Amino acid sequence: MRVVIAEDSVLLRAGLERLLVDEGIDVVATAGDGVKLLAAVEELQPGLAVLVLSQCMEDEYARELFAGDATGLGYLLKDRVADVREFVEAVRRVGAGGTALDPDVVAQLLGRHSRDTGLDALTPREREVLSLMAEGRSNRAIAEKLVISAGAVEEHIGNAFAKLGLEPDQGNHRRVLAVLQYWG
Image (cartoon, rainbow, N blue to C red; front, top):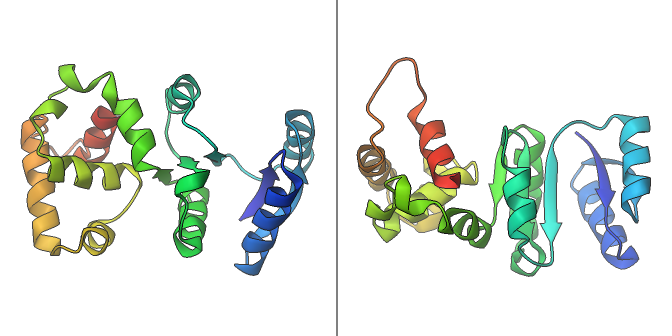
């Protein structure tokens, strides 16, 4: 994975670079502003994945970011990144085409659209499981994060599918459809 880091704070930019390099991730450039970022991306062609690490939730920006295909996209809040291992896992997941979303970002994105999609019928635990699915986590990872059994995760997912009207269908992937409904 080839990474370009854009961060206006020189100390945070250097820290992120060191952290990723120490984890074996190839940081090919760093940029202190948007102009330098665009130039580095054009020159080095590092890939299409984008992980936003923001000081605060920018509702409009997040909605625009996730408006199209959510493949290889993430949005994390700086103050809530408390575990380096989880952050590096999120970088790798987004780089591999997955997603990484802070639960507060998911709640903000969901807040305006939950009433018309059936999401209001979900229990808090079903919402929590769906939120972790939206972050790109597997059932096993969800079970570990919530300290519940894999069977319980499957049950919550099944209940969420039913409440969202996602019946088994060979032509559609219900997990992806549930996350898309969740994102609104």
